[in-house]
Length: 109
Image (tube, rainbow, N blue to C red; front, side, top):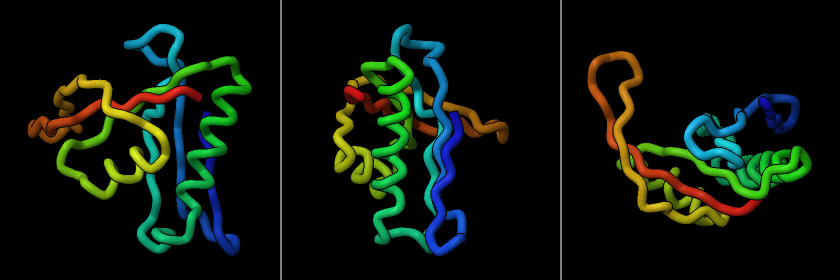
């Protein structure tokens, strides 16, 4: 499921979620991005609320996501959104041969 949030007709945030391949019964938020022009506007919080509502409506009780370890702003946002660290860590190579450290977050929908 892809959701796009706009403010004054301008798209500023996007979420993409699917059934989790790694955690049966969970949904995974594969991507959640907000344009800097929307930071502080509340659009990302609204989008996260709607993303979780859609997942709940689709029958999911839990969701998880991975974020880069070294992105404190993203990590604060997920905590503020009710996610907690699961304790799982990993790396992901985005195609440039330089794997980046990630941490997993989870929460009930």
